[in-house]
Amino acid sequence: MKLNHYETIYILKPDISEDKNLNLVNEYKILIKQQGGKNIFIQHRGRRHLNYHITNYYDGIYVQMNYEGNGKIVKNLENSMKFNNNILRYLTTKQRMNTEFRT
Image: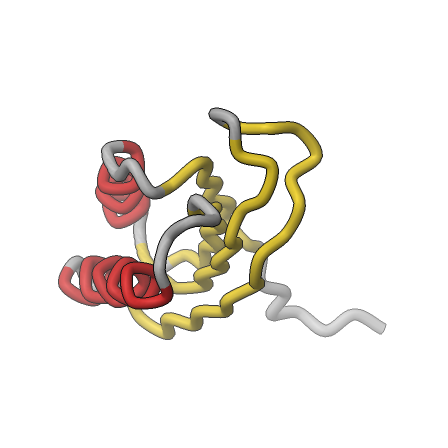
């Protein structure tokens, strides 16, 4: 089975504790692994000001996840994020990986 490269960025509420933040990251990492995802790379982008307020929040904690998987993993991950009250927004994009060398 061919795995595609994906990037998911989600924004957490700014009043979430560091422990809850780490628990969420680990929860999603385990979810991806259980469904057959590979090469999971997570970056905490930190607290940033939002360009517009989302449900009365003007700041958010950004987390970026890069991984290899299939569409089923993305669907399950986004369904889990949709029902999590600590997540303000999320976005998943399919990444193109250039394997050709052009001269």
